Image 1 (cartoon, rainbow, N blue to C red):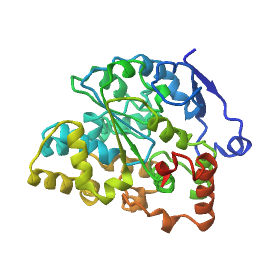
Image 2 (cartoon, helix red, strand yellow):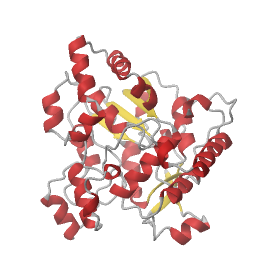
Image 3 (cartoon, helix red, strand yellow):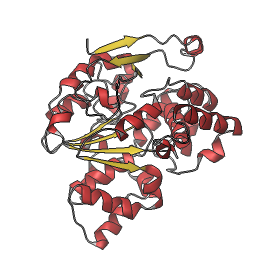
Length: 358
């Protein structure tokens, strides 16, 4: 059996998952990982917190065809994924800004574990009525017909651009032999926690508090956790065609990150073109770009959850602030201390992995 599905037995989770809208959460263990080229002695991947809906597509992803000219991006959620997707797609497509504005990013760069589940109900009709084709939530939610990003990714003409948050053991077995280009992006855990909370409230109808969400993350009970293992496993891949990026480094030196991506994809542009790309990728511009900001879905979701007054709330936007230290304003001293202690428990100061979490 490739995947095992394990009920979450944590007593706090069991007592409160319904009120927080987390009833579909499950731990998933992958038993097919022998071909993953990872430099961790006696490595056995931990179970990962996912949705029960993953059962519909997990094996399809493991067995999917991988093409040499594919481009894959992998991140733990809220680590700068959308920002880097737009950067990669433009670098690889001749800086075609017009197409990048006309075609939703999710159509250009599908999120493969986004689950399609056939159903016919009012919410499905509402989705279709506002033309939200390819606009994804978390990759683990029900989507009405005809939304099926995995199907569309499998059928895309080459070169394909593919997004996932899955850890290495869950990726297609063919990836490790075909070896297309893969980009991994990491981000500081405190920034991830705050951004992931706001994302979950606005797009996943999460009903808990920031404190509850952060503590769930520290208990490895939010989608795609465990967080530290995610970053460590990708840092230890012996994969010759991978570029590793850091969100904080990209914020400090976006032109430098753009040049790094150009070198990785063997692309060359003039200084004027690079400046235009940096302007396009400015977070103020990204928030206004309807092809990437999922504005329609946010508005729809807030209407459906009786929060229309928050449509213009910055914390309710898919692309929020893109800051490196916004967590300092939002996390209490107690939560900051708890998050730091959590990282030290998982990754001691003298560990070679400590720099991944700064």
